Amino acid sequence: MRSDLWLPGAAAVLVCALAPLPAAAQERPFETVTDEVLRNPSDGDWLQWRRTYDGWGYSPLDQIDRDNVGNLRLAWSRALNPGGVELIPLVYDGVMYIPHPGGVVEAVDASTGDLIWQYRRPPPAGGRPSSGITRNIAIYADRIYYAAPADGAVLALDAATGEVVWETQVHDNERDRTRHSSGPIVVRGKVLTGRSCQPGGIPGGCFIAAHDAETGEELWRRFTIARPGEPGGDSWGGLALEDRWHVSPWMPGTYDPELDLVYWGTGVPGPYAGISRGSDGTGDLLYSNSTLALDPDTGAIVWYYQHLPGDEIDVDYAHERILVDITYEPSAELEWFNPDARGESRRALWAAGKGGTQFVLDRETGEYLWARPLLHQNIIASISPTGRVERNTELTHREFGDVIVAGPRAGKDWWYGAYSPLTGAVYQPLLNAWVEQTSLEFAGTGNAAIRRTIPSADQPGLPGMVKGFDVATGELLWEYKQSAPWLGGLVATGGGLLFGGDINRRFRALDQESGEVLWETILDSRITGGAISYAVGGRQYVAVATGGGSSGSYETFGLTPDVPLEAPRGGNTMFVFTLP
Image 1: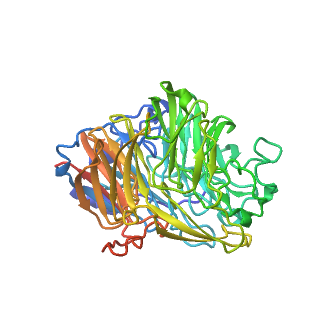
Image 2 (image 1 turned 30 degrees about the vertical axis):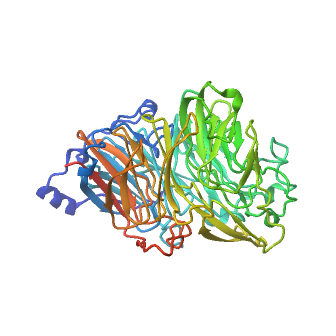
Image 3 (image 1 turned 180 degrees about the vertical axis):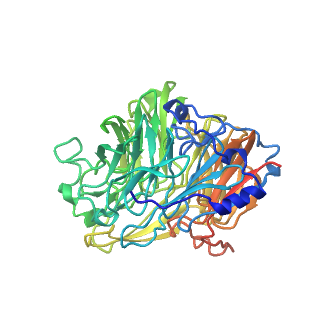
């Protein structure tokens, strides 16, 4: 097994002699993380990428609230490895586990940032050190589970020492044009991972994989492109399986333990334009841009819902699914909704994607309840009362070199949203920008398009937004707007606050009920990590990572050239705040 493990040695001993390590960093028995612990974590822990299986991104901690948030101060900061930052750390029993970019995982004392151990993944043979992003890791039993960005391996690390317990090769980055940009979730002893698979790599497209948490043995693969002869296999406009590409499940999933269903979002077909794919222009292209409800034991699809059939312009629906129980009462503000389910209690699922439209489904059956644009959009033409989506067919490339203008370009992307049970609302950072896309002939690799981010046709001077919507009704509760794109993920807290930040270095606390800014500080670099909140020793902390993400086309100040905004990329840092 390849590993490069660094543990604090003699130098650390000298430091300890001067200042003993806090209690969280001292050697002590590791308390096993069980299935029950993942289902019902301690209030002070952050054990999954959105803290809990339901994807809420909510911490019940309320020590920091509306009245005292103005007193927040920096508790500690720590430099991160170079590369794109879209990460969310984990916190368990006073230890923070950080998935750095570039193949590094660290365990640090969550109250001080002092190093406990570091794992550094060596580059592939003959390769260069990776700067690839890793959005998340997972914890289960006494192990940290990690999907390596540079070489396609999934690993189990000892949570107490960082030593490699097992590693399994899942794909080859170069041969398969596939990579891990996000990490696993663990469901009943199974390590589930998605990945990004580019055209010209794996014929027949991408997949979700399950591995045994104890041994690393692969248990199943669920391909996200329907196979000929299977349901949906004839939905690819006459394309043979080897000419069907992409449909990447490149973000992690969520899980309902009661229904025993895993929910995973999928990305777009590739290349982007139908003319570049070589299809006859017909078909839904299953299971692109869909929510898949999977049996975690087998990977079988229990149900699916497609948010955008026949995509031409790269508007993935691969992002987090938020699971909420509601009494469905569609608001008069909704244009697209199912009238027959009004007044019923439903186990609901909220999802949104780059196309800028949010959907609420029944997560037990996949039944459509309502949909509503998050931003001004021209991608979806209509949605029937039963949930059939009709795309705007004017946004179709007829010849190579055609230019189409569509929006939003990525209204909702990897920047993480949150749900608060205090308000019954989902909160989402948004990028209010459009895209100009030119179609090209497919040359065997890539997505055969030239794309340029342009100002939105609506409110072009306000590309950065955060909005709150009632999940049960679809009502817009409030909206916050600004000139800088807001690409930092949110955390909602029991103190009635939302924390998150933008690429103009501003880290803020917003009021969940009104969207009012209650606190703000300026950090060193672009805020593109996901904020979290946790507690150690009875003290609540709020953490976020800076440095800039993976897409310069999103992190642009060119959408508002008349506004004097600037912020550096790099200087990757974890910042942690607390009350005095």
